[in-house]
Length: 436
Image (cartoon, rainbow, N blue to C red):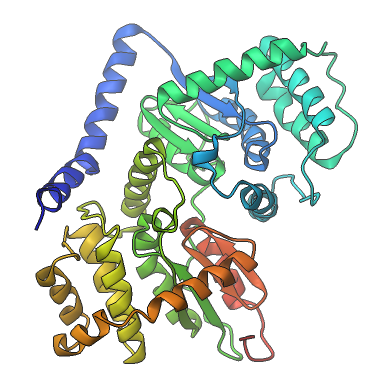
């Protein structure tokens, strides 16, 4: 066992603990009070980003509900290393934003295209004018609606800023975002923590409520509550659906989705088909440090919300993942794919098990019911690689490229925070068998 494998579980358990996070929050609040500062929420708006168009619609509601000062910043798209599949990201974000808008009762329809450069430049010039005039919260949402619908601008009385002024504002926004440690648009930042758009707004609201920042007379209802599906309703009768689960053993979001995915499938009477693939970094795609740090912290926060063990990590990148996939293929052949996936993901993401060592991998395998005598030949069998590549091609054909992703019939989606949509697809009336 390497020194890194020995230390990583200890360090990660501390860094991602709820106690450390709460201590950071307490220190931030003490500093705010000592300085007599308001609850200052930075919002980073990317004009060509559909998720930002949705987040902008939340700003007036947040300002009405909470005694906060929202400080908007215009930012450009993320750098290439943070968006390695940019064309897929751009296309999928429109489709996903339309799904999310329908779920939250907001306005966004996928126009099947990005705004033209001319329309985007004009839009940014108006946004900057609204920001400088103190009207960003009021106008960002309506302006975004006009941009994405192709309709006329709302009557604002604004004098658009110049292209040079917009470029300067974007440069300043990029620098501020980078200094605070992020890379995306549609992001909220409050006192040391990042919150991505509507999908993490409930974490920000819960924190503000804990601090007593609600305005008088405002209820505890959230603008964008967590959308985790309830499984109390009776399953839909009919042909058993198939849930195709695209996963990576090195993905923290996959790790915190695994128990919830199987719970949904059991409730719906669905068959889960595991579609494993190599992680991005092992396929030659970069994952910058800021992105890794945010994902780990965000996954820990989401895991606590959903009651999933997480945070004592022994990163399975490289050999541990390859050996894990070899045994996952064996387990599937023996009908124990779910058991091994659960064991492996809990082991490396919550228990600090070194899956690259024989001792650690044997522990995970035998806990899942595998005979260790069968594992030796399986570890020498590289046929899983062609399966992983076929799964990757299949996922890309759906317009997806990240994990965890899911397909039910003709419906597909990406993200552990889209299980509500998977649940709806599983409960939809079905008349025939699932397509192969």
